[in-house]
Image (cartoon, rainbow, N blue to C red; front, top):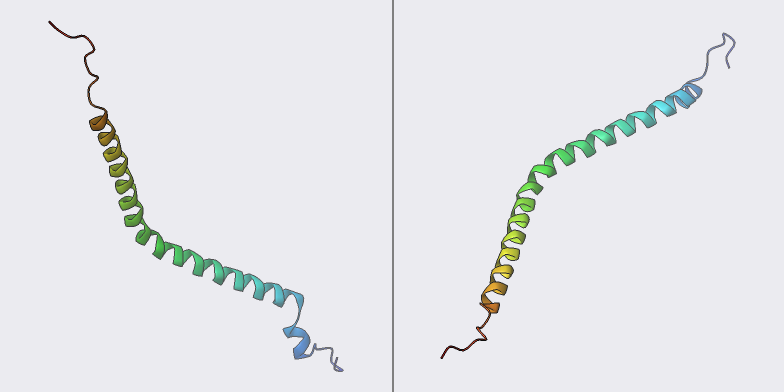
Length: 81
């Protein structure tokens, strides 16, 4: 300390409140960057999800229709004279 009681510049720079403020600023910048990235990527993922859902539905409907076509009606056991 100097004679008039002022704190040197190094102590001001490395004070606990400044370090905490820097960490909160870094956390805030990270949260903003992540939220902006998600806001960009979600609309790009929607067509893939819709297309995937429709393709899965069509595949399931196709496999069900093939099962009903292969099984066919039950043969008539009774013979007519």
